[in-house]
Image (cartoon, rainbow, N blue to C red; front, top):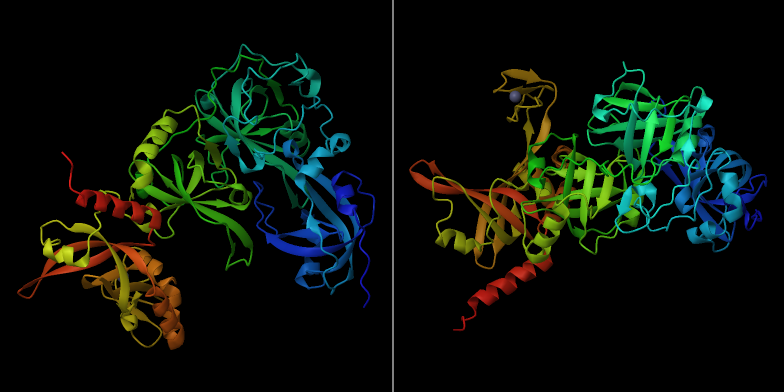
Length: 633
Ligand SMILES: [Zn+2]
């Protein structure tokens, strides 16, 4: 079958706003994406395509949901040739010229094909630099928009919510000129704002009629599109703060167009006549019982220079990293710390949904503890932690996968080196002088942050120093290799009752008996209790490894391990065990003596398993060598 010729140059023409052309393009990538909008009715799956015109590719192409079946029936797949019959340009981040092509109608001309040409991704700068004439068209919906200044530097994409201090993304009131009237956006009827009647955000409620708030936009999300029974729509949300508190505000469709371009992160506005309702806790992480919706009567007016100086940039309620251990999973918090290390970006496929995600993990530290923070999507793609910057997170979600972790959400506000808190300087000084070379308990590895940093000992030192023989347990870290794992007894059948955790007896008739609950269940959970021998150059020791630590050691969940056991997949289990034994790790152990018949034995329980942080291990060895050197008098 002869290859169709592609319409060279069509993608750039589309992006610049000429959307009437019915271009023939090749689909060079398909991603199914998670639908994340504030509108719960939009639960449908969406596909993002990367299209090629033979010369260039463009990856922000959203397929209309009515064409999902083309992909699901494999009529449309990678390398398919399509004709675009109806396409629209949606500006998703005007400052940086980011747009999305919305594909409303297309026809698959050829389902199977070879890759045509050697196309390269369209450089974004090209699009930005050349969009002078087309900008206005992209913004036709914002027809009462004041003329915008030159695009802000691409260094601060607002969709990632990262504000880099010192960049133009956060203009100070002084360096902006505010022409009178140009930045006023009165709603219907041109009502002006009653500036005498300004109330605090924390007193707003749905039963008030006339009010005006004076608030700073602390966070603004990108415009997101959704489809529900009434057709397609769009929305954006922003967070507003004043000295009393904060509130989330959302604008749909016409108000979305009107206010998204107007409201700028960091700027102060008078706002009146918006609707108030109870906050939807599923999406709203602000510390307010209510949330705001901008409607057609809403009036927003920019503050004149100097008028907004008393309004804080953002309301942070920081908790120390160690405190996260005491917070419940899935709640949110505000936290600040130094980026100690950053992982490479990973692409993972969710097992449940088969969706692909980019993620990157950073290790965030403060004076007492460290924790793993996951960045997703664009945040992960663009993050560079090489300067060990101070990062503040507002509304970040607490997870409990392998101990405590933090995960950014769409609504999480990230501030780099924030100036409004003294913690930034405190952390900077602490990290540069001390923090960068010490290992702190890592909450993500189940660290017991109540105890101080544990000393690294050899296995023979543990015995010679009599550790574990006292009344209180001793905590020790050991750099060791796993040399034996009792795989046959590694998992047991545990009571399915959430708070029980006892072993159940398999009655071999499909039911499982828990003696503690005194009940018989039709199911059970697999749980780890692994006996392992660890060895270093001075000796070896049997230890017991439970749950999260065993999962970290073996690299699979107890469920997976248990099911391999049920299926008698000996070779898979052998493989898992072999992999777990192939390298050294840092084992943090709890050593405690107990009486066994007439004998006092020390039991070693693993409280964390971590890969070796070689740079800090190296620094520790250097310190030890220095201590061996004779002191000069
Ligand atoms: Zn039980």
